[in-house]
Image 1 (cartoon, rainbow, N blue to C red):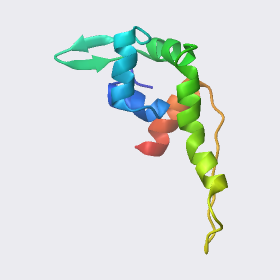
Image 2 (cartoon, rainbow, N blue to C red):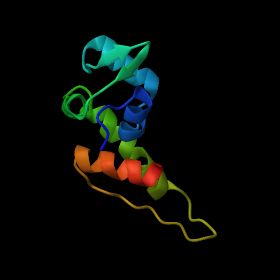
Image 3 (cartoon, one colour):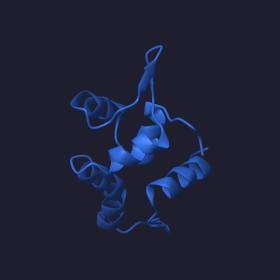
Length: 101
């Protein structure tokens, strides 16, 4: 696990866009450190952000959208699979680094 995460890392973890994350920073829902124009966030800050009652529904909607799209799609001419992992935030961060890198 990394010590700090960038806005792009946070976007990958949450499924939110970087613009949305910047809006949440402006609204005070996410705190972090800005050095040389780049934001960085600790795992604790990310945990607090993802548990915020105003943010949590957005993350769930983004994370569930591919599943709903998959389930609602027309039958395909080839086999497809959709995998859902139900992980805590810390486990999700580890999994996202493993799967996406």
